[in-house]
Length: 202
Image (cartoon, rainbow, N blue to C red; front, side, top):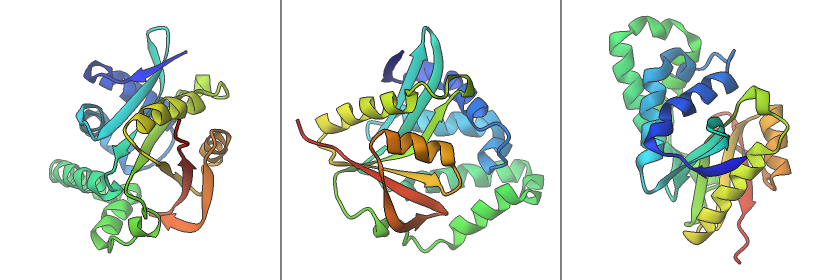
């Protein structure tokens, strides 16, 4: 298994893994489809203050982890909100789906108080997306990708990794705990619990 930085040419492979990893889930990302995901992953892959690592089995992408350095999650949310608004102009019927309507309303009403509850350090990274193809679960891929991210983050002077995970996402919670993340008690952000891993300097 090889873990490395993603390239723009990997974007379609990232989307394939995303669709497989989250198949059956009814969130607005899945409703909006590949075009929306393509813009999201292009944003994550191409910026210097962002990261996307892929795990490859041969030439095949079987997992990825993506997020931002020293950049609040709300920056990503605002970009996604703008893209979502444009998509709804073309396909307004999507507002009939609660999985699209609820996140949109929630973000419009949000008072930007979530991040301050746990982002009390200046040198941090937030893992925004982690996905492993179902056929490759149980092989420690999430941990390998987290280790690759930690190595790069340490070189950048990052001290802490954060990751928001759905309260009921038992598989992801277990995978991150095995990778050395600990739960921040009593902290919620957009319905997610927050896990933290401190990076030990070399």
